[in-house]
Length: 587
Image 1 (cartoon, one colour):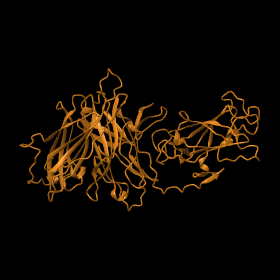
Image 2 (cartoon, one colour; image 1 turned 90 degrees about the vertical axis):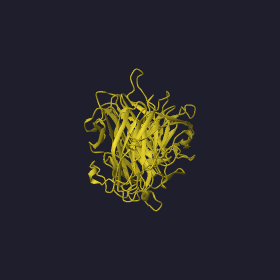
Image 3 (cartoon, rainbow, N blue to C red; image 1 turned 180 degrees about the horizontal axis):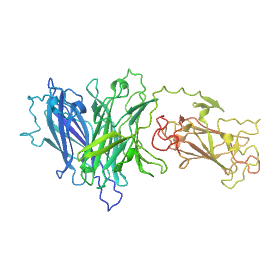
Image 4 (cartoon, one colour; image 1 turned 135 degrees about the horizontal axis):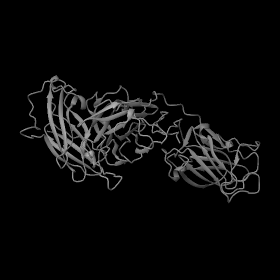
């Protein structure tokens, strides 16, 4: 006996207006894996699937799902990812499986069954008189939960995965998205077949489904190619290359990936208004094996959205429009899995909005072509990816005032954003040599022999500096992360704030004068947070107010915990400079 397992995960609906019907219903995803008995000489097997809700309405169906396209090839294994209906009152779904045929030769992927010779020896358990409508099992879709159903028939075995926990409302477009590497209970997903061994391998599933809820316009999905950043190398995977299995160039972190697409009437207010577009990436055993010297710290990047009706060349509507960003760390430097389950709304699968003055284009489209069919296609050139290059040589560290900066001279603030010596009412410094905030740019250079080299804040004055070629970050421990070089005869305290965007600030509070060491982790900063702005405000209760050097005297601001960033100055959700950080330099 073999089994077929169906794993279901459902999601709640978000509706913008209480008097507006929700077109999505409670969407859920369904993963099906089929493994027939190992009959000698069988080169291919083809199946049909159908899902009905509690009202016996068809959710979706698919035919001619052959192992040559959706599985390992010979032997008959397949894997397919679709959706199920968890809307109120319709949670009790039924999954039907039919066996279209076992073939001595490869079945034709184009649908010509004459290319193979159907065997006459097997007894089909999923047809009359045993199961006239196909092998059937109930599958209850539970909102915000998982459910597992096992078929106990002669040609089935357990599947691995179910999806979709969160739904977000794109105005009148309803979408679900998720990236999963593990099933409920933290067991790894093994869905895609390795083309070398023929065995199922660890799989990353990117799941995406939407409905626009508009009876007059069909839902269209848009997605850029998925990219894996592994060390300094970038690998691109064409999400319009399916449906079915796709074998990328050998040697990369993905040995095979599969594209699943379809219509789902449970996702829409009108029949067929919902579309799903899921991609499963099989991680290469040879790339991540212990003997491999390839960079194994891989992160998945991508973006997707949906519209009511088609968009010419994938150009999104003008103005503010939502895009889902996929930014999921997959593996550690040692190749160990760090990806788990990442629903929409997490930091790894998040929604951002386009800038009103920026034109944004996505390069692949999933469009309805018939009542029960979807076509995925490339419609524009995806942003160019960087050619694989060796990791950059680490900069030589430097020491100033007994403080070591691993990032070298690039560790120091690069530009003045603003300077207001009268911020708290003054008075300002009167020395003609200590009124130039640009003297804070770069490494510390003040000495008692120089007339310039530092700026006096003024009594209660404020200075804002920006990092451009690097960013301050948390170190993950209690070591100092930031150093403020305050000089002069008086030791004067100040207030410190840091910011990612120059608008929203994280308050560090009062710090001492002279060389001030600050551990920003203690204030909630993480190693993944990139802070580009530092703001210092003089403490009005310290220092002389009647001399020419009023307020704290700042020579330099340096980040010891730092990450290099590039000229990624277009806020469009794309990693323009291909450094693995999306929009790291944009404001």
